[in-house]
Image (cartoon, rainbow, N blue to C red; front, side, top):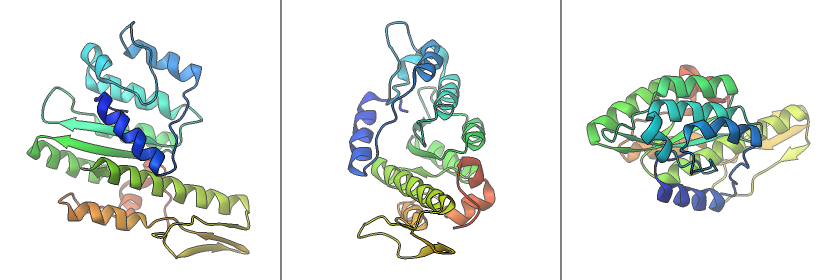
Length: 222
């Protein structure tokens, strides 16, 4: 979900480059979203929230859009574009974290805006266990890694014999349960620490687990 149509298009291209697809929102989800949009604009995915924000405010539109998306069984994760420090776009991060926690779905954010406001938002997101990135592609990479990790754990729980993700950057560590071996995807901790090198707060998967990553669909162990 985005406040900028252009950023939504770029994000879609990046998602496809990482072998992810936009969820096809159900009719029920679209009906829930329609009151947030002006009559002339039907909701779609990617969600361009700006027209709805003008009439209803950022907090209401973001929160209700995330709630509707999380209730859709075909949505596996939320990628939200955030802007802080102007244009009345500041999000309600605690509520966003709570909604995704209750749904058991990961929330990853791309963040831009005024420098001091961005830093403050980063600190708040870190406390809530929400990964935030200053570059769209790195945020998409993180979302892909998280979804693959969750898929690998689901494969283990379903008793599949072996699942692997052929990727030259794949983590070679494996998770074993009886005769089940799952090759883990790209190292999520590395992605988050690379984010820190760009000046963003360092947040590891372990920190997410301790501070509420379970809220956003992560498990308590890696």
